[in-house]
Length: 216
Image 1 (tube, rainbow, N blue to C red):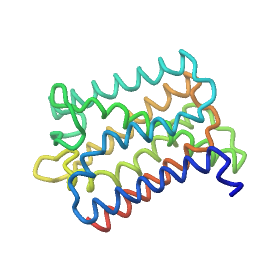
Image 2: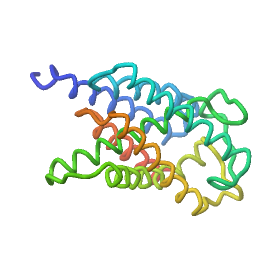
Image 3: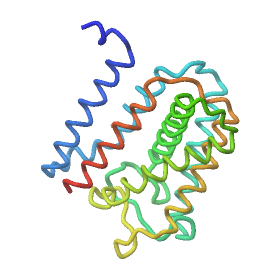
């Protein structure tokens, strides 16, 4: 088929198939598939940034900063309970240092980047010219919506556990604030290049967790 010759389309197809398999496995309570979450994040990142233009040293430096800063933020959050609330990571997300999975920084990168791309797509559609601070604010909103879907599922899959099983409002306010900060950093770093795959990655993950909220 002609449409399969476009990288955006066949990469989208790979993601959809992979997430459908994961959705099916988690729905029938197959623990092995949940344990593949770190691999899923790595695969999603590789596919996502394959179509990013201008992958230069500045690009990797900015991503590395967000990765390290987000991991440190989560580590402080787990250690003190004063940032997001009181929570502890489970075993699903893989190897940990100071009780914090190494892979969690990658999750922040994916959600920040795709939320920025969704914001850009909407702005282009409506011909809005958003200043960087407003673009970051909109992107952080999409991050917040994603987190609202993620949190209930995360506890059921042992990504992390909240104290008494209650997700505090503090988590969402902190997620928005730091999401805004990271998005603003990426915008100032010039990472908002047109990536036709990014909004699809956001949508696939959004649907994935929305369906899991229904099934689990």
